[in-house]
Image (cartoon, rainbow, N blue to C red; front, side, top):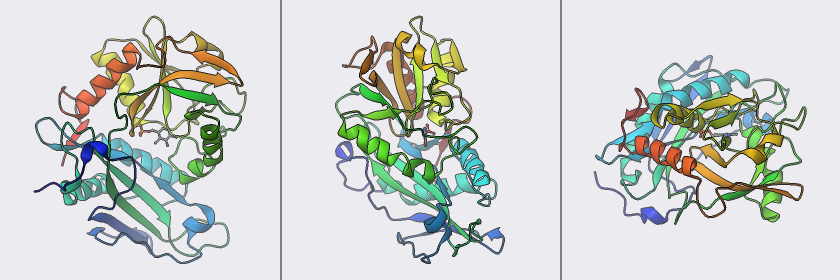
Length: 340
Ligand SMILES: *Cc1c(COP(=O)(O)O)cnc(C)c1O
């Protein structure tokens, strides 16, 4: 198989159309068998459920070329489970068990020429999503749905090294208690656009959302979970029912404990404590970990001792170990790496 002639190391994080995508439709109470197609266009009725009441959820994962030239995906079973949970909460019919992972494999296989080579820093980003397709005007779940997966090659998240981010404590809330913060729904992103555009205009990279009920506890950013490192090297991550359970964050906590021998804690984190942490990072599939250098709360600056130049020591170790596992340089825990 010949790779596409792309400038892999200089790709951005954007959509680039590839050849094949997967489509499956739900109608008359059942999902069809699904198939690959070259058609990248969706034609919908003007009153489709997704267009009126935002009945849609999505996932995001990556395929990598390992050091020994295998193409692998990272823990796709967890994306399958999370999409299942998102569907239940949004009254979207669940996919048959195993279908998600099977479809991911088909799409990656069919677009093998777009999987960036080992060492380029680039990866193949995979985007599964489901949405209501039939006309819905009275507020109720749709009767028909489409499940799609496309993929697009994306460049290295950090070109020329990871520069620590500056984060703003947002005056907006992300997810209500007992709301939809724990599922990967498009609606959680639509409402985060105004806060993030505003934050960018003010010179910040991201928003930190606090718990809406008390505004005293750290939740997450618009699209990444927090991890903190204490001065005595304990890895701490906030626990809350309205945080999206990041697969990267859950994996990093295991890496911290099992590979680096560090103590880990998932617990409520008061904003008040943040000033006492030594390091801070944001975790998600896109960047694995982005270091945070500074958090600004209405003009009051909290600066991490790791500084604004590079990742903190523990953050760097977590990053190196998890990417080492993903790229096949380090032995992976059972089931983490699925070969295509
Ligand atoms: C997708 C997402 C994350 C990161 O999850 P990963 O599984 O690590 O990619 C974190 N927060 C939110 C709100 C998300 O939507």
